[in-house]
Length: 138
Image 1 (cartoon, one colour):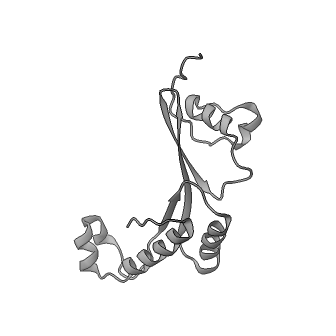
Image 2: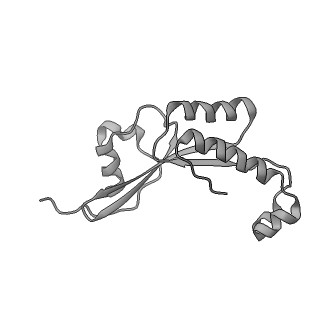
Image 3: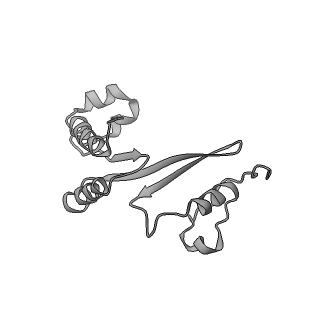
């Protein structure tokens, strides 16, 4: 299910409400939504994935607490779209991010070439990026 809200906190509440409603469905109701859900076990808690442009630290703390203390399978991801010349780049990061916030210059370099700048090589994603040609310099 997809839920939207004005704030990340509101999205967390709506996501929890949707998960509770989904967990209350019986086998026939699940199958009527999609054939892939025939294998779902009625009453099981679904995984919650929250996607936002940015997060208030309180929302991340809440999601972490729900996961750690109550076993709620909840993940948070930050998504941003960058326009670099004629290129449009999509950045998806799991939140909270490991360590420091990424350097925007290094992130753009990685998305364009798959190579991280030497100063952030340790923080670069392990999966190579799709190659792209940088736009010509002006």
